[in-house]
Length: 437
Image (cartoon, rainbow, N blue to C red; front, side):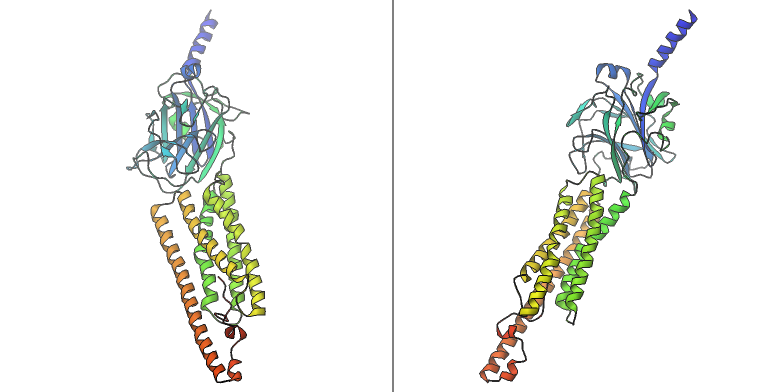
């Protein structure tokens, strides 16, 4: 009799206790999801989730879906006062900053805020069963989710549509929502809950409060389906963002100007060595860029595609440059490889400069950063063009003066004076210097 009563009371208590499934990818960031019993039974209704992480992060996000495109994203960041969090529901539309979703029925619950150097958001969502771009089965044993966070200065905004920088770490995972089903609390993260690891191979149950859940160990659920983006990806992004612009905005134009402004024996080889070294830098930046694009799933963006095209197109430059040089030594003037080398190089480097701007937009850089790049890149490109025009005009003027002088010498029948100039001048060539780019 007493045993039956005890078992009945235990069953009742179990149905009252809420359950959640947790996932902590690292960096002190953790996510927890609870599916109330009525929602699990009906397939629709409220669900609850918690997003937590260090307050030193710029933002943290959790999304329903397997990739950014078509995902239902919930982002949190510090508010303007720095004492609470702003919950920003957004829709993923592709490999770009997700747009604010005004149709999301979400509520920031008690226990949310910034305390003890942690950001915590306890959230109730009333229409997360479906959204513009997808849906979710709340009884799925392998539901698909994405997560991301950004290191750096806090977003510090009260606006749900605040512009944010590109994530530092990003990946996908799967959660067993059957392990998250249970309870009927209006705020399960401020009551005792049964916490289940997202690992499919092992799970543990423990009672925890909002604070203990938000301070979960990084390794407590690190095997929940997805290894996570390497934490040092931000360093690689910075290196790529430095090397590529330095090559295309500074070194390539300078190498092109060297051959026109300087005049000494071996200047051609200085030009060639300068350009080959710059190309090696570009290859290093390409390797970083491809790695970044793979781990952040952005290989299909226009910045990545244009970058690959540019690097492949630059392979033609050393071939056409060497061909031009060998033919120049024989003819003393422009040849079949000269102008393809010059104009192809100018076009590809210009495209590389423009693609740098696309990269800044893709990474959601600050407006000041984009403006600074645009100004510096424009100044260097204009300077390059001015040098080209100036040297072309100077060479034409010099060629005309020499041509006039040659004609005068011919009129005076002075073959000795004509010998002072190469055959290319008497044949009407614009100049006798070897010019590249």
